[in-house]
Structure formats: C-alpha cells, structure tokens
Length: 514
Image 1 (cartoon, helix red, strand yellow):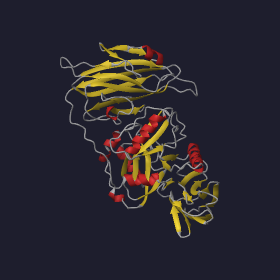
Image 2: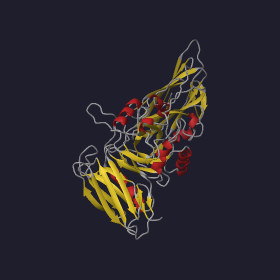
Image 3: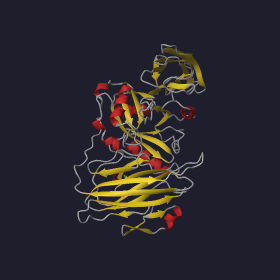
Image 4: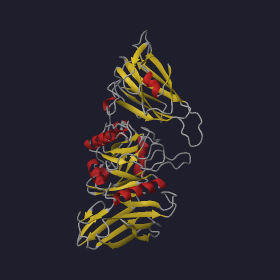
C-alpha cells in the first residue's frame, strides 16, 4: 500500500482500503491502516506494509491503525525511511516510532501505551512473554492497535517511509512478570546523611548503550548511593530493575519526557508509571496536567538541560511549574553556563527552584572513546534516609549541592547569634545582624572557591594541591537575601576543557526572617 500523506491530503482523505477491508479515518492524524485476518490452512505469519511520504510542514504525530485478530502471539514492526542529502544548516530526515494497544492511543491513556524507541531502533517485537527494550510485554489483545510515527525532522525533499507489520499466530506463552527495583539499599543506609546520586541516566531501554547491569556497575564504581532511571518516553526499564539491583545502590524510577518543546524529568514514580509526551509548550494545559499527575504519584518535575543545543532538547515550558532545574548536565559546557545564569537570574528575582546536576549518561567507553561518565556530575542531597520519599523531600527543599565526582565534598553554613543554617535552609536573623558564612571544601585541588550573593562573587580563595580549603566571610541580611558557593577550575581536568569549568556548586542559604 502506498500513499503520499501531507496535512491537506489527510484532511481530504475519508478512508483507505487495507487488506481488502475499509478502515475509516477517525479524528486525528491517521495514516492508511492494515487489517489482519484469522489464519487459514495452518498459516503462522502474516505481514502487511504501509508506505508513504511526509512533507516538511506536518503535525508531530501520526498513527497507523492495525486491526489484530484473535490468536496472535507476537507483533513485530520494522520500519525504514530515506535520508536524502541536505545543505549545511538544513535538517535531514529523522523519524521516531512507538506502539499503542487497543486500550487507546489518546493523549494521557497509560493503559494503551505499549512502548517507544524514538529513532534508536529500526524494529521491535511485543509478546505476552517478552518485548524489545523500550516496549511493554503483555497480552496481544485483539482489536485496533496503533503504530505511532513521529516525524522529528523532515528534509525539504520530504521523507519516504515504509512500515512492515508482522503478526505471528500461536499460543501466547508464559506471561511476563515484572521485577521492579527494591525500595531500599541497606548497605548504604545511614539515616539522616548526605547521599550521592545521579538523577538522569539511560540504558538500552531507550537510546543508551549500557545494559542495566552495566549501568549499576558504573554507578557503584562512581561511588553513588542512588540513581534515577530516566528512559525517554517509556517505563519499560522500571519493570526489570529488580533483576539487576544490589544492596548498595538504590534505583529510583523515573522517565525523561521528551517533547517537541524540550525535555523534562519525572523522578520518584511508582514502578510501572508512564507519563505522556505528546504536546508542546504552546499547550500549557497539557503540561500542567502531567505535572499534576507526577505530583499525585509522589514524584518531582525537573526542567532538563535547559539550553541543550540539539533540536527540540532545550526546555521551553514554565519554570514555575518545575520542582528542580538541571543546571549542569554531563561535562561542563557553555550551555551549562547559560543554565546557571538563568537559574541565578530566577533566584535574584525571587523565584527559587533548587538546582541539580546529572550526567545524562548514554554511552560507556568503547573503541578509544571516553563515553559518558556516570556520576559526572552528581547531586549530593541531605535526606533523612536512603529511601525515595526522603530523597525527594531533600531535593525539593534544596538541601543539596552539585559535584563533579565522589571525591568532592562541600560543607556550607551561615550562622549568627548561636543559630546556624545549611544548604537550602533559612537563617532567621534581623537585617542588621552580622552573619558568618563558612565553606569548607575537599577533593578539589587547584581550583577556586567563591562565596556569592545577589551581587555576584563576594570573596574567593585558591585551593592548594591537597584539594582542601576553608573560607569565611561576614555579611548582613540588609545587603543580601541569600548566599551560595561555587568551585571552579581554570581549565582541564576530569570535568571539561571549557575554561572556568564548574567543579561544585551549592544551592543557597537564605538570610532574614522572611
């Protein structure tokens, strides 16, 4: 079957002929569909093909209806598209793919979601027993399924695509049994303490190259106490982490919601939770809807890599609706500097959203490539225990600092009149009271440590080769409403070759009674 489908053609099309049956186009961006028939004469497999062309000016999502009869054991989808050459500065073709079951494909229908691989894979399978990573194993219920296609970018020449859908008949096999991660990591439990974690990580369940087992090994080697699993637009990893968990690493469930208006993280979800991504910043009610859902599930919302320079990666939604801002993503680069400047500007305007840093690691080292280091950077959070609710409470309160590695330690306090406060806390003093600010750092050789307030850096000191330094300063609440710390390296090192790279930074301590 072949069709050239642009927006106007879709509006003109009233129905299509597929496998000898008419499938009417429902409201929405439906493409020509296929209908499979019950097997005859011992038939075990059937394959149907849909082809077409996307033009540059089109909606974000299209759906191929797939009518599935009784007795199907497995669905397999293979797709391809052309990649014509384009001039410098012009975006070529890229096409995402996923799947919804007969329970529904409307926005916000979690029961219908059966998986997503974006543009990372060219094929996937789903059965009752197993599924390709990124997809959800479970019964192949008869009814109308939908393959979802997401034209990420389309070249000026258009995009020719082909989707081959194969159903295999037979007994369904043993049902898949979810194995979520344990809710504790007893070997690392220390009660109220500082816990190190990486809150943005990927495996083969989305576009990462690490297996879950490899990610756990790298997180343990990085000295982390917890990690957050944040696969793009799917919760499939949440259902298998129990197979790889250890007693010295807490695995927290999450998702990276990858929209066409940027990315955001949902952290601390119950295992098996899925958050939809099919909306833009121009649809604020949809974003609010899913922020509310994450909060209802007990999770937090993070504005991810706000100035990432890949297409549709920079965060365009409301910061006021976010619980956290990821100001440091992977090795320090100019877009991280932009994110810190934005965060600092929000802070100066009276809008404080706690800052976090995560690796967003996708690739392990291979073939001489350094890959992405898990735990570069990491967020160190003061929590009542190494349990997800307590970690989320510490993060939301801003009781955390960012560090390039587990060797980096920061202690930061403000005190006056026998009272003291730490990172993310308020020191309740009058505007004329002198406040002593003290920061102690270790594990940061040949860097510069600075104390900042609303006017910028107020006092700085070089850190010697042994990596330790204590810096004190006296200020008054009449001069500033908050203080914070940055540690930077002039050049080189583990973190980045970018000049003046961040090595550690804290959230603020607030001064004054309100």
